[in-house]
Length: 206
Ligand code: GRF
Image 1 (cartoon, protein in one colour):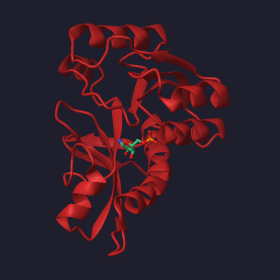
Image 2 (cartoon, rainbow, N blue to C red; image 1 turned 180 degrees about the vertical axis):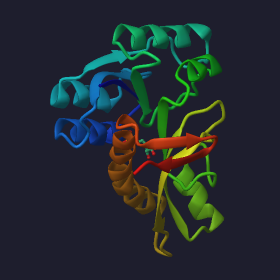
Image 3 (cartoon, rainbow, N blue to C red; image 1 turned 90 degrees about the vertical axis):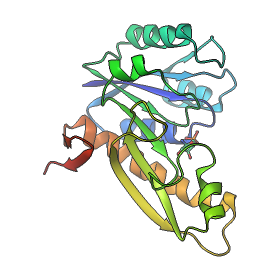
């Protein structure tokens, strides 16, 4: 069993997809221990507590990248039993960069979801970037977190077409639908030990 922490900053629809897949038994090796947000007004916090009965925690150290923020996060993860060897951390719309120290502590155990086909359009407003660039396909990426912004080894990707009629909203909505399927699938594969890691290349073990 892996102990799971989900880090959010807002709505939490990907968090919900992960928790639902665990609840419904599609992911069997993962126990949700805590949902952490850096914002007390994240709607995802109530959802986690009320709909899924998962503990929640609001990080109190504000928005700057300080050592104390990091220390607090490590402490919370530790308290909830999400430890480097037996834990897994899913970032789901978490709008902060984790410090190299934390990333190092949980090497290849932090997953993130990003709404583009990386390495295209990293960072903020990925859907807007794709439209502005004139890309004809986009999608979503699940990857391990390293010290860059959206640069870690890719676990899974799914592509969708961009239509001439698309707006940022319509594209975001269609990407979100595939995000909700892909993220639980990636967590399941990780939790079952079905990912073979060879440098940046990650493949499935049959
Ligand atoms: C998603 O589009 C995710 O890919 C990105 O932030 C958004 C979070 O949405 N990292 P939600 O909070 O999971 O609904």
